[in-house]
Amino acid sequence: MSCAIIGGTGVEHLSLEQREDHSVHTPYGQVAVAAGYLQGQQVFFLSRHGHDHSLPPHLVNYRGNLWALHHLGVSKIIATAAVGSISPALQLGMLVLPDQFIDFTKQRATTFYQGENGVLHVDMSEPYCPGMREVIRRSAAQLALAMHSGGVYVCTEGPRFETPAEIRMFRQWGGDMVGMTGVPEVVLARELGMCYATVAMVTNAAAGIADHPLTHAEGVEATRSLSQTIADLFVNILANVPEERYCRCAQAALERGKF
Ligand code: HPA
Image (cartoon, rainbow, N blue to C red):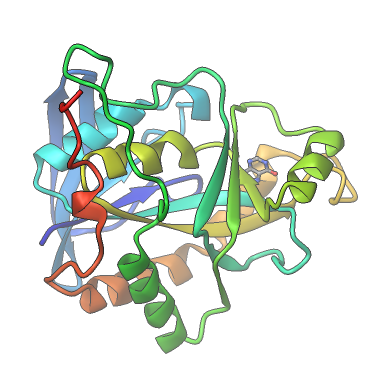
């Protein structure tokens, strides 16, 4: 069993013991992945936006990143993501475990299957691994962290923030939080049969709910203030992840290449 952490905004660095930096050659370009240990537990770490946050959400190499982790033998992924809250239940600084998403991205490669290697209509009934979500929920409870389990993550194309009208629409359509990077990451993980869960960090109230204009700096500041909490949570999660997989994530891509 091999775990990876994909760090989002504010989680560009993770201090690992015995750290080794790899550059993995993928069909989608080179991908930087660090390997090491967190309190004795082996883990891979990938910074989604690059170590200096130079990649905006629409230019992240999602396929390269997931391909690289799969190539390294990773079967379980814990991703972090900054989100704006749409639901009043999600307060600033809260951690949230989304269980569904709505995809409002526009111009991203969302599949490894472009026809020449077959077609895959991957099942999305449970996009986020229920087993991993439960491990994360329990790990947070052991640390007495305020974590909201469940919620609909709306993924926008970015890099601009949303208009208040868009946020009102997302709310009517059942969205609880909004971010720019959750899709296609979760989809690609599923295409590769990997377990994937997101720890979302509420960095702001969404546009029109917040009483001020939104800034990226606000999000970075809010996530950085949670960095020790997140690092402690990672350690706990890794200690609690079981060897076995009781979910159906590995079977999600069984139809691949059949059509
Ligand atoms: N919108 C989109 N992405 C985000 C937000 C937001 O309000 N906050 C953090 N990431």
